[in-house]
Length: 234
Length: 365
Image (cartoon, rainbow over all chains, first blue to last red; front, side, top):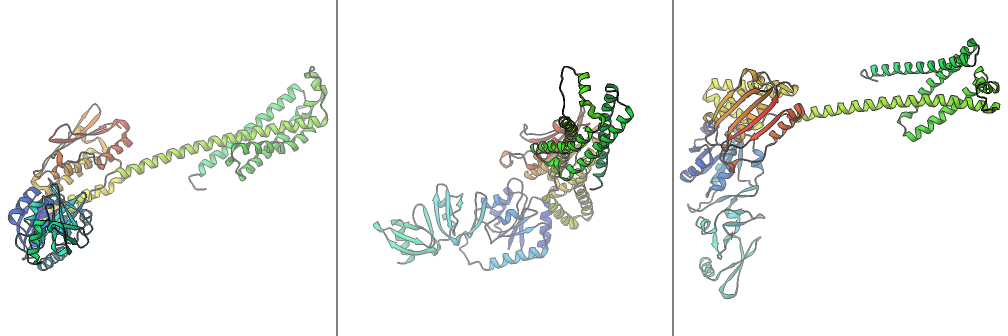
């Protein structure tokens, strides 16, 4: 598994590298000391796992995640900011306190490994999770759990469980990275998750109305309705 | 009664007897002189009568003091106290007034005497009226006695209340100072420990040095609550240890320059204050900049004032929090409590690439 270490303190990076030597299946493909450098390296090296410090010059570890389009698995490493990590509304995430206990590292890596194994094979380019920061709250959002993506200007409103976080990207740009087997463009403004469709009704002028589980009814435009019928072979 | 209160109680006991004896003594002397000189009484008999009567008066007033203390009269509201004083004065004055009627002192009311001294008055006193006058006279004596007694108590209580007030204010100030004194930043502590862990493998000799410096820094912070002020050179020792530890963490991102002339080294500054400023310079300066920079500590003494500057490179405005941190506000509050208006701490943001914390402290506080 390709991993990257992102920490502004060289001794901390060396120490983590030494600790990771005990886990040969973790291959360290790169190290970065600030988030600009890190963002660039993540795009080119495409690691599957990040060891990420929170306090760094030029922006925090959270800032880095909001900048990444494709967010890999993340293990936060921090000396004293565990409250910042705990404040997260995420369970798919782990954090290690520095100095890092080898036993805790093994535990965290074990969790990463089993999460990795449980992953359903996806088309190579499809996004799996996105990192969203809305105000003071942050989430790792698994896309398969998102039932609806609605365009709001240059932002996307995600309907995810009870939350409706706002993502700072354009819908058209994100659409290309979504799994086409799961997500379907319903109209100019909305993309729906097919797994959440409860029922579909015929509307006027060849439009369709899709009722989403736990969510609103979404109109499928006439043009898209034809596509929808073909796809669903109705 | 505890040991601390005992000397005060003894002192007030002594003062009480001085007042008592002086008061009654003077009262006796005046009446004696009046009797001998004006009425030409036999002075031996007069002296005996006066000593007996006023001796009883003294004894009664002493018993009265005991009585009012037992019944906590001093805690009463003034209106209730006045009524009690008047009643007590007459109750005690009555028997003494009656007794006085049967002494030579009643001759003050003798018709012959009155005629001789104040012929114009030309009035006669019946026996009962004469007794009444004697009772009123004694009542006035006890009224005056009680008034002086409660006035003295009032003054004493006011003073001790004031003393308590100032002691309380001092205690509050101390507590406030203790609270404002900055504690070691846990973030620094854990990062330093992480650095040490890394150095153990990289460079054992440096790891040993780091542990020693960390121990010194910890000891200084843990024992600093005992002192309020330390010399600049004492504080600098620890600042240097701290900066050495931080430069092991940041490596070439942190460059340090310290310029403190001998004249400034002995000046007393609040403990942990320079440390706080240097920590801030690291946190908001070096740690925020990918390339790091120069941290400069410089001191001069001019016109009996120590001028201590801590400079750090300033990150671009986007990542810089504009408002002042709690650390700086606490430091300023401490300075105000210790030096009043004579010390100051300013954050100079006029230069866009450098932030300077300027500390001014009087050389002779």
